[in-house]
Length: 200
View 1 (cartoon, one colour):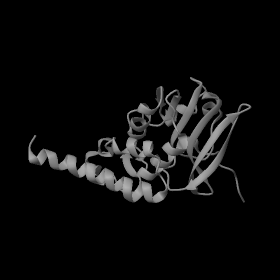
View 2: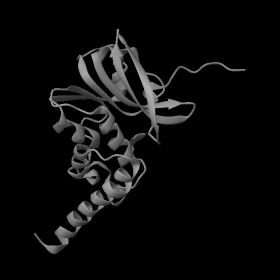
View 3: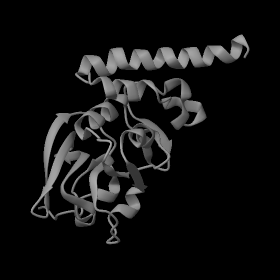
């Protein structure tokens, strides 16, 4: 390997260390397994070529077609709240070949992924013990709730009055109640918009 080939790899590793030290740790994401997962996956492999130098900035990165890669802190907090287990049968609503999928896949027994545009259809697969929605939603569809096993966990972003937060829920008696947690900027998924209400 030549020196010029080594430099980008070294720069990428330095950027990942900086992300962990200056974005995750300082914001309360200190779980060793979360930090290890995020240290081991190259974010620059999941953004357009023109955005590779900005892969570790602390904001969402546009991927095209209205999609975004959430900031490292969003994914770090989502992972920590999800607390994926080796026995989990997990579903990611998002890009199955994307960054969050790469983080989750080694931590669970199995990981399925569906595009947000397909998630609200009545076609149901599962049940899943863990569902992670890679983005912020205005409302959780019944089709997604139906895919979650009893006592299963769901982690998502949640939009309330224009503010996005990470939210966690658990299915009990057939319902999933979401508890808003940390306020943080999360790309919004239009597929989960609430019906518009008339106002005068």
